[in-house]
Length: 106
Image (cartoon, rainbow, N blue to C red; front, side, top):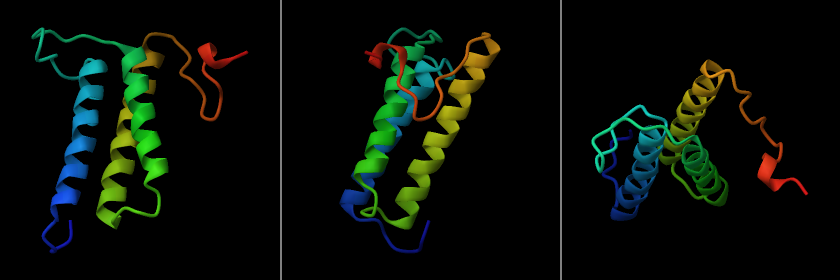
């Protein structure tokens, strides 16, 4: 990160992003769920959390610092790669970018 001291809004924004990222890691079974003390996988929730991060990225485009944008983009990329890897290991086809999810089809 740069040498500038982050302001409160930047700290809060990065905390929000970290909260979503931590939730996604738990949902992908990469971390124990602190409530159950078990490793659990919930791909539907993981996909929702990744979608939320992508929405935040889209809605904040042009309004983030370079560091904030980089952190958010890297988090999304890493989560997506792990999501796809999990699906492939299970023999499932991951959703394709810009394609409606099955529940969204008319």
